[in-house]
Image 1 (cartoon, rainbow, N blue to C red):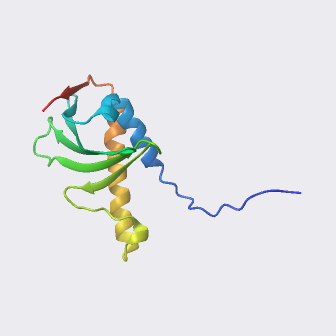
Image 2 (image 1 turned 180 degrees about the vertical axis):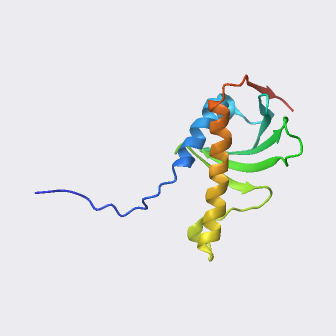
Image 3 (image 1 turned 180 degrees about the horizontal axis):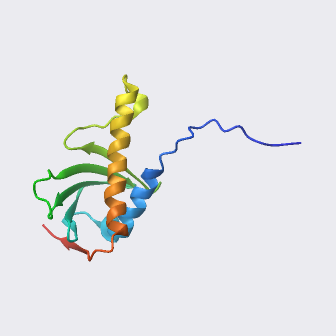
Length: 145
């Protein structure tokens, strides 16, 4: 007798939430204990500043600001990200002052909402994975206010 289960969940998992959290922990190991100050990542191309906005029992809300030092004409990227420490997920909740980024199942216009939320989280993945995988010299420092 076969006991196969029919898969009913979405076949397109949101893998980037988990990867973003792991990259945050890899690049900024102090992020769980960050209550004030800023964590700063620098390499030859860019500077990323992480600032704690809110801490609760299982989550941390941080702002991420990315500036391109090698190309100052490119507009900076600003995001607000919620880190879920118990589930080990990171989710972009606002991007370039567009807030909130609504999950597709809460929106009337499902395609547009899903696209914005998904694209913001994939952009965060590209930023963090690029930092983690780059061979550039990098410095992560903690600045206190």
